[in-house]
Image (cartoon, rainbow, N blue to C red; front, side, top):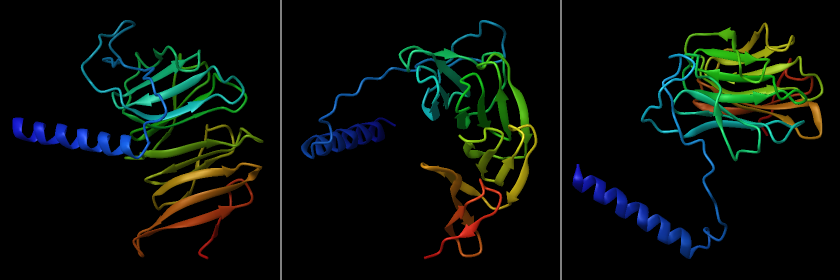
Length: 222
């Protein structure tokens, strides 16, 4: 209601004032998009819709830094070829859920993986077409990784466990059934990877390490 709206606005103003006093606004930031949302899967020229375009996942091509992809709350994937200055929706003819994970191939900017809803999708043509490569009910991917030394190895940390592919994402093996929240390569060793995995019995998250590109894992509890 009106009172709640006023209280919310006052709270935002207080937070901004406090941040300014703390010097957190010393840098200048400019919104560069994407700003639009669309009714996807409605033809080659879908209508814009009134929905938020909050970005849930984003990745930049390592080999071609001008290419950037992002997934938004409005259930779209956008692509930029000028480092984020301009964006094009590349899932206008695809009915997808909100993308929550996105990964660009380390040497080919046209290959990209997107985790959305119960699926992981892969495009090999820069987002023109998409193939579903993994389907698990309520999968909800948190992170997708392509190994920089061997792009055939792909990892996906999801609410339905950790999945691993050794053929570029065509087939997958579940390594853990528990929810996995984050997975990252060691920056100077692509064979080493770290994982945050849920322990439902202890009701905590645990930290794991692999030294064979995610095939076997060791609990690091110290």
